[in-house]
Length: 297
Ligand code: PRT
Ligand code: ZN
Image (cartoon, rainbow, N blue to C red; front, side, top):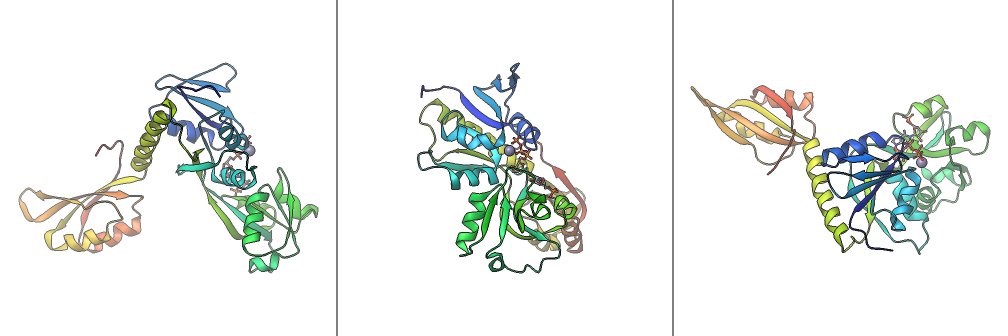
């Protein structure tokens, strides 16, 4: 294949991952001019272009070198890795992106007495993920029938084409509507940046390194909160012990109150009401949890 000096990113054309993926790329400072057929978007701010395709095609397009990286569900990437032929270039999960979260789960009819995987022996399981399900069954030494369906997996037990299913679950509403219950989780999934196991050695490698660095910054900021509070000197140690993650807090004096300190802490992740209540019990007051807009350390 001809060397390329622009990075090509594949993403879902229209579906659950489309909007959050575009938003993430925008936050990384990428902007695009949409072409008329909307399959290819030319990158304006950086030499990074978009290819808009069905999510199932993304791993194959990367493996064939048509695209350099792609934003796709871990469920789709892992299924491809398990079912792709040995002639396909190996793919890697370069980053977890924190949206499109769901689980690939075994679900059984509500009245089923299912307790453990061994009970699946001899049953028929409908799924769109034969690779992931097959590997999970093999690991446990279970021999069950795998019925591969492209869609509408959840109605298979009612139709009698399978005894139970293995499908994606998010809220669980689809399972309830079909009188099924989630029984076992095979995979926790979210959108990931998929790419070749080995980064390209040309300009695209540098562009990918730049994209990864910006992604890391965006993800870190998105998951960070700035916690501000006041506490008496004697309570600072106890308060600090309760802070959720992040580096050591900064302590500042409060004018006119020598025994009081202002504490500023960067927290990795959400700070819950319960955590705030605990911190307050330890002696803190005037607590503020602020989102972080940008960060350069
Ligand atoms: O056209 P194209 O092939 O690109 O789209 P698609 O229909 O295959 O994909 P899409 O947009 O439905 O999903 C894209 C990706 O989003 C998936 O590969 C997952 O990584 C992720 N994702 C997150 C989900 C869900 N949540 C989800 N709930 N994908 C599918 N579902 C379906 C699930 O299959 C089931 O039918 O929603 C139903 C369950 O949802 P709850 O909320 O009722 O449990
Ligand atoms: Zn799809």
